Image (cartoon, rainbow over all chains, first blue to last red):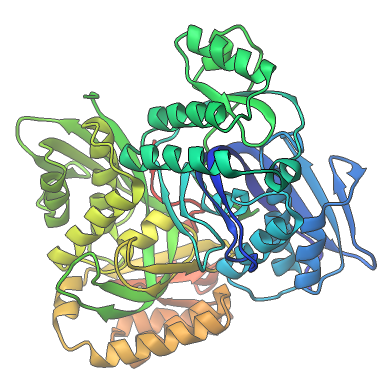
Length: 275
Length: 275
């Protein structure tokens, strides 16, 4: 058994999605597309007599992390340091689950494959209701398109072959679990339309365009988010809303050009990695 | 149309494989496993009135590159700069094909998805007989396990969740096309056994062990390669042969410890990327 191991998991903003529930959490998930980000989460695992989870210095409960550790039969101190806010649409809970799986596999010498670890983290996230597609996207990196839902044994991924500078501002939290447990019919219809558009033309511009239409048609825009997206458009930029958080992301200098003071990162070329 | 674009494609050493021919080059391929490398190939594409391919300053013919450009209806100057020797088992031809696909898609604004570009490069490599599994591995990054053969629409990949320092020495070239056009029955049997071993225990140590048995059982070892592997083992290291080249690769400081003066790189966490 090693003393500790650390994994880095990129953040992930989903631009649009459709929800695909299933009784089997490894088959449940979402279709959609998003950007993985160089801003992400470092997760360090250390064996301990009791499991504790610390995010940016504060002890918290993160259901998917607890589930991953139970599945790996591991008791550990989990220390996560995130460049991204929790609950704001950056996939931080998915990152913590996936980072825990990767690092715990190494520390406790569980000898599981990448697909097995991603399956465990994805299933834990689905069961907790905290996300449907972040984990598989974060394992992939780049600008993943989720063509078919579920974990690695069931899903189908493609990607937009591009990279970009990404800016974002976050106005607050939004509960993924609340939205996903509500009526998702309009959302699913809008998500399917957006996916068809991006499959037809897999470019960043078409992704941003599809994402904006989705946010509007799915009825998820808040006033502040809507205003920021309009401001970026007025400055000839491309922005949309991170699903699901009160967060706006833009390509290039979109938010800066519109007078905002955004955080700045880029698309992350790789998926989650051990450090 | 852009003036130029550059893609980086990691090198790839295959430790073991089994060949799976098919009349459809997008279904043909190999099962197996290997290491993608931080040493790789930069491919720059520039529109031109006539297609030329230059590798490290020398004009050469690379069939898969020509096929990729034809498929994308592109006439271009292709300039590749490689940290790795051609024909020595590092997947340089695959890297050139995939890098050409990625960069030409961008320069000529072809709006294809990552899977479509990988399919084109993989098919071109298979048709040329220069490789069967490098392209899909190089698109994936990390330490990919090719569970099912073929391009992205047909294959199935997993990965060993690990990274490592990698050392290598190359004694010379070996024609992949010659080996693949010969009798591959013993090779395929040994490849299946090696894959079963790594699926059972997806770790770097088991990958190296399976690779050594494969090289021996498939009858591909040359005297110099065999000697170097034995030298590394005697120094308590792990080494095997790159398929297909007269090249030995080792984990960590395996070759240095055995008194060789190897090139040093590491596993590459990401697949091929636009720069």
